[in-house]
Length: 537
Image (cartoon, rainbow, N blue to C red; front, side):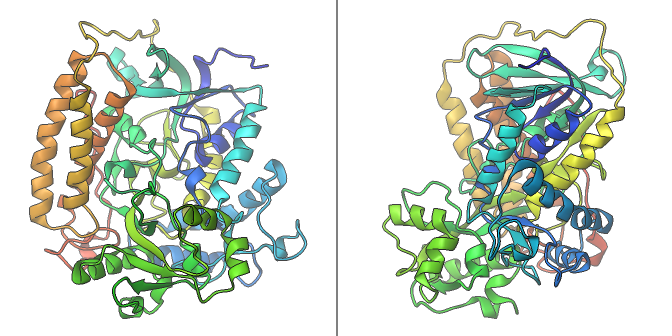
């Protein structure tokens, strides 16, 4: 039985992916935790991670090799110290998933013997180091962690709740310190203050800001938005990773085709001619880093006029394909595509955000008692381009480090608990305004701030997003808050931050490619933090 009031706790966690859940389980050893998640607890980017967790788990591999691969993929923008921490501390934490939480990664031989793990190879990796559970690793890990959280008496999970804004002492005549958040119950529409000694953003990324994405509907950048409005610094927002291969089918909504298929020998071919093309773009061909593969596909589609490219697995053993990729096999079959006999039509889609809330090596932001972990954070691990399967690794490592760091957080709060004031706001009667702006933002981001950019497109996007944000501001203060309005507010601000970062970076590096500055500039091998602009946004 849960033993504490969830609305007053030691640690508030916003989000229920791998980072939030791991943090909660470790932090519960020394405090009371409340997790706020805006849908079901299993609905997160973690659950959609097919490939696995990259970590050094084989004697032929080494931390130094993993560090080197990560730095190479990051195109000169990774923080080496952060990369070294993640690669060195990851293996023991992956083992903890197996031993403490019962995650059974695939084995080639005797289950339970680490040397027999069936480690996958993915783009940008020089060794097989991706631990996986078939092609549904994230969903399995999330399920095990949710079970552990649910069983823990010191953790309360509030599902279908959404953070509106952070509570800061600066709004009460104090210093720049966070002491919780206003939280919306999506079912009752009530907004309450949730007070905490430390607040941890683990809300995931923001790929839903783009029209085509591999992400679930919850990935609207809420964590970045509320942190920025509270004054926290953000950085590297221009580096949005487009996954090269999402299923191209009119009825398939955002279904990812894992990079692991290419790791096992899949080849990319032109739709019109069947010709392979990746060798012309990179020495590793299909196993090049994701930014290279995505741009190559984009270039070939524009050159040929084809709708998609083809991922061909038909030359591989049919039984192996079904055993190794059961989820993808079943899903493709549901659309009439048997990957044993027919190539899979694929296109790039927005997938992973390398930027976010600027944090240190324990997840602490530029504001006291505000932490960010997982995809919402900008640690410096990914630099300008994420190495495949380093995302779950990052969540594991920095959630664990943050859980130890918050132990010493001092409690700050005003004498009187803040109450949400709706003022003269009325119930909205023009939902079409929200829907239209939502659609327009995602289309303009796809068309003007996508895989390939130009100054002209970025400036056009900047002008239009300013107009849209002003419309949203007027609507926000006039009408009662809904979760749809909050998400629209988030993606509009996130879009603005992505555009601002892209305009400031006058070079091409990693995931940011600008045809007006096609070369990498060594003098710009740095992040460009943007300081939060306050609550008036």
